[in-house]
Amino acid sequence: MENSAIVNALRLEQAGHRLFVTVLSAEQLIGATTIDYYDSTKEPTDPGQGYQRPPERSRITRIGTFVIKQQGDGLYPTAILLGARKPLKFDGLTGRLQLPKDKSLRVIDGQHRREGLRYAIEEKEEDWIRQLQIPVVIIEVTDRVEEMDQFRIINGTAKSVRTDLVNSILTAMAEVRGHDAVSAKDRWKVVVTKVVDKLNRREDSPWQGLFLMPDEVGKQTAPGKVARATSAMTSIRPIYDWLDQFGFLGGKDIDQTSEFIADILVAFWRAVRNVVPTAFEEPGNYVIQKTPGLFAMHMLLKDRLLPNIFVGRRTWDESTFEEFLQESPEITDPAFWEKDAQRAAAYGSMKGFRDLADLLVDSVAPKPKA
Image (cartoon, rainbow, N blue to C red):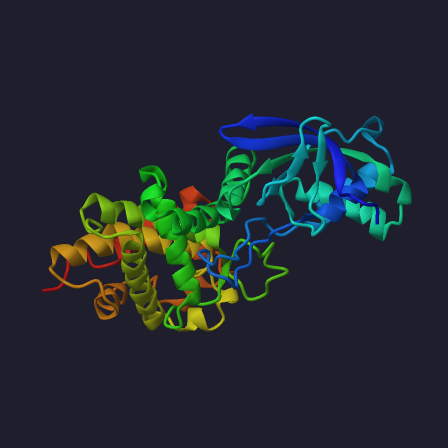
């Protein structure tokens, strides 16, 4: 492996941070860097939690093949952004930058490009690519949270990255910087991320272990998962907004709010399971825990059950939810939820989820019991 300790670099400053613009050979880039991956076995607030989504093998091989075949006139000009969590040694007189030798530079933006180069060199044994020059920008960050924030800004604004991953990064940042550092417009993102994590972990939750989390690429590689965490977060937001609008979240911090909403949802879904248990025995064969059911049932909860139970001076608990749900011939019929029956499964878009919700709302008793 080529010595990657010292390289020529240009230093500049932005907002009190030192940045270095340099060129590394592909071999130097691979040897000096590492990638912090998100790990769903760790809580979003774990100090060791990463932030990169899992690499896609197809993208890696496609990039590697692009480089090997010298497509695009042999150019590979896009800079890779790296983060240094400790100050780097730089000689301003000679413009020489000393890189760490422990692979401690984190790839903030460009993991697939880095992995494509590694694939070409190590798996396809194209040794000539070791010397390919790669433009690199290195930013010195104060800690991993600042590094994560740069990833969130780049990938959550300029690029399209799954909502659940971006929200998980916000949640981790909130734990380190304090909940007061979360802007009002982003508060819901942190809350619903915590709620989904609780639903996915709690032993009393009908959703335990069923959400496809940010580090799980697809249901093919994560058997048994029935719905994306992204869908769950999106479907829970209107419930958060309703509770907030009518003052039920007043005086609660982010942790208390997420616990409060998670308790409601666990009680609600336990009641759903009570009235149609067959649909929960093999969730892969029914859509009540897939996207149509997830969205429609949460719309039902917000539009009918939460307000009606509150007006009736009842408690949002499992037994009360069950009283309302058992009135519905659709909700209580497992055949209605079969994925191949083309009944609930036929509602396959956001408009369809709304239509399904309206059907279910009409099927539930309109007035609370005394």
